[in-house]
Image (cartoon, rainbow, N blue to C red; front, top):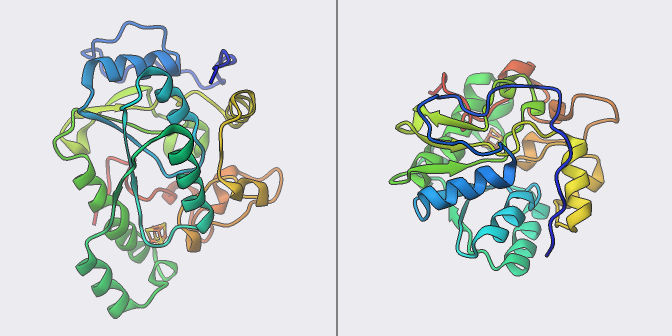
Length: 249
Ligand code: SF4
């Protein structure tokens, strides 16, 4: 499948590197950063996907067929997310390394606090995210040198400072690649359409950000794209913990 040239970067400008000690001297494009990452770290590098779309999977498939990919199955995902995962598996031949929460933690949470405790307080929401996402992520990254994410600076105030290449101090200082950090929604959709890349059908139902089913809802046109995530919380709290350095439970 061919790949179109990506349009100009969005308005937010940050250095590519968060750390001058990282040995990268490329052009900073998403494709070049992925190529650098795979050449340097494969097989100790993996893509983290939540199956919003197949952009990074498409790009990686152009570089080498045996790239690694993992996903966190929180137990609360939408059916549409599983359907996209399956579509991408068939299209690109990927073998997703699914990571599940520890069942003891989920059982204790649901038996003690019910099925929707995350709506009751920020502390409870972070507890659920910790059990279903943060702890499983730490297991997914064990023994790796680098991981790749789809984080973009336009996804909310908590992500505005993301660099394309940074060190993940929460996970032992391994390299974290955010190749799409300077992309915006328009650029994403242009790339998806140009390359006929599968995407999550929830986008056709008014969703602008996709996470767990009970914590995500459609967003009216013109509103902050991330306002559909944890809509009962303040904007500065809208992170599940896997992309932040400064909170844990
Ligand atoms: S997004 Fe919601 S359901 Fe998913 S782990 Fe976080 S609090 Fe729990």
